Length: 308
Image (cartoon, rainbow, N blue to C red; front, side, top):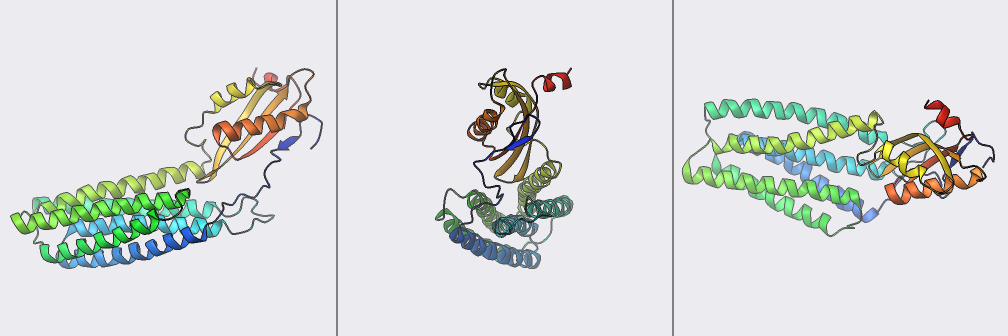
């Protein structure tokens, strides 16, 4: 490190590798559930078309959204293995963000179609083959139970795995709803239950899709990660021993679990500037879970002058 103020000092406790640790067992589990989910989504879409059930088609869209989320989790595992190079010093993590944005935008279009069809069917009820609808929904319940067990029995410390499990649990609830609607139609003949359920499932899809779109846009715009208040952090850093001024704090998301930050500080009179970067970086890691920090020490008074 340079001893002169004005030079950038990085957190020396990290090796500057921006990739996550990959667990082979968890990757295999997610791959299995992805195949089950994507395969059943196709079966469900065909079954919904044959049975005339908009609810099954809507739930197939929900399954597609979750299969896409599982695929993105697999991409995250693979990307974590790709080495960085001189042209891509942060690696290829943003590939996953771009895929999520495209996926979310496509699903929003699907939701619009489902809502349009649901309104038409509520006004003009269509014939529903409740028997085939029930069979397809029961198969979906079994598939989702198998997938949920496979993920639940994996490493609970893996956020990719936890996120995938939440998606599968949502699919499981969708299957329960489809079974309920099919039984209700068989017992009462109320075919309106089908489009009503499709609207409910579309609500689940739009929630997932909008989350993908909004989170992807935040990452691509390098917005400050949720839960991090730049002004509050700068105020807290000023209270650290040896720190005089703090400014130019910036934080952004690199991957789902990796936050990068830079900050400028100045040292109190008589304090060695070289002692500040480890103190500031350690506080940001421990208190705000920012795992890669670059601290630049400027000349005393320079930050105050910039804000006047």
